Image 1 (cartoon, rainbow, N blue to C red):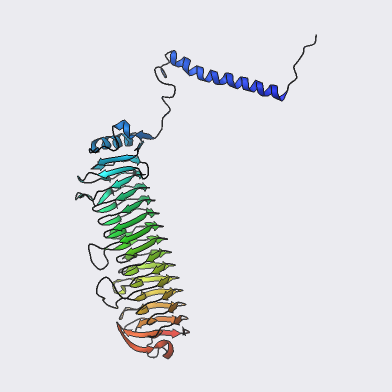
Image 2 (cartoon, rainbow, N blue to C red):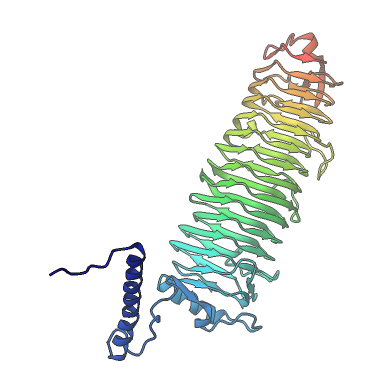
Amino acid sequence: MSTHRPELTRRGLLAGFSRSAAAASLAAVAAPLALASSGSPALAGEPIFSRIDLRGGHDADLAGLLPGVADDQSRRFQLAINEAAANGRILRLPPGSFVVSNIDLPDGARILGVPGATRLIYGGRGHLMLAEGARRIELSGLTLDGANQRLGSHVTGLIHLRGVADAVIEDVELSGSAGHGLTLEGSGGRVNRSEISGAGLAGIYAVESRGLAITDNVVRDCANGGILVHRWSVGEDGTMIARNRVMRIASRAGGTGQNGNGINIFRAGNVMVTDNHVSDCAFSAIRANSASNIQIVSNQAIRSGETAIYAEFSFEGAVIASNLIDGGTVGVSVANFNEGGRLAAVTGNIIRNLTDRGPYPAEYAGFGIGIAIEADAAVTGNVIEGAPKWGVLMGWGPFLRAVNFSSNTLRDCNAGVAVSVVEGAGSALISDNMFDQVPGGAVIGCRWNEVVTKDLAKTGAGKFAHLTVERNAVS
């Protein structure tokens, strides 16, 4: 007995698959409905999707926080962040403004706002945010307004993180702090893609850091400093400062260089300052004081009020390379051999448009100098244009030792190299350089600030046995 078997076609096969899929979908929907109606312990009385939530988040409205309310919400905010941190969750804040004060960030605190729309306003009763001894703190997408209100004596910054092993500050806008904008004390982690402005002291103050990275930020319009990396005593620090834009830094507290710097490194060793754009600072764009093994590479220093790039006092090891300096009273100064400042490579920099008018009465050699250098250094491949006093000051009195000045180009300077010929000055080599339009002489001998020789590039070093002057081109 034969049986008729329908022909298997593509259309028939697809239709069969469609009917099977539809049946499976109905069964999948019906099963949880049946379980819910049957009083299953797991799902009875719950909506089907009640257990599907934003895992890792904690909505602020669930903690009673309301944006745009004029009242101080500090207590509710503290409860919300404590609960979120205790449960390993992110406190997610909606757009709007919240007035808060004295928020203590517990270990694991993570606060996420809507960039440019979530605003925390300091209520002025001690501090805005403080963390102490935490392993990890994260702040992101927040606008923090200090409202220029006084900070308590227990903090120096609107945000003050003390002893935080891994601090993460990202996409944060911080303005109007009466002290520093952000203080990181004995902390590590990173600060990036943030904007800090209008601080009464410095934008970022990091002291005794532990593997900190400060990258891709804007720091502007601060009263006394931009980015400060300090230590209480000389030691290894290792902070990386890269790709930041620092501008319009004043020196309202006065002084002759301790304030008014875009990027300031003090007593911190092994720090890298690279690829930053620093402009319109009252004193230095980048100033390193007692900071050994400092690298200052590929930065732009524009319209500095005093020395554009400085390595000073007791340091050993400075690489200052491939920077573009436009404006300042001195382009690069590597100084204080009398204090132990030594060992430097100054290479491939462009220095131009200097001035002999400084922010205070001129001292020592004065202003209008391209590069000042003293001890154990190679100065090569630099271009200096428009130094109204000297292109280079080499040594100061007896403080000169082992300086190699070669393959540089100097033009349109009042004089080229002013080298010390004081008794006790050490060796210096000046060779293979190009001098163009230097009416005061290509190489001149000085006793401190007084020129005492004719052009040594023409007459030779003569009686000065510590000098080698050769193969320079003068036009």
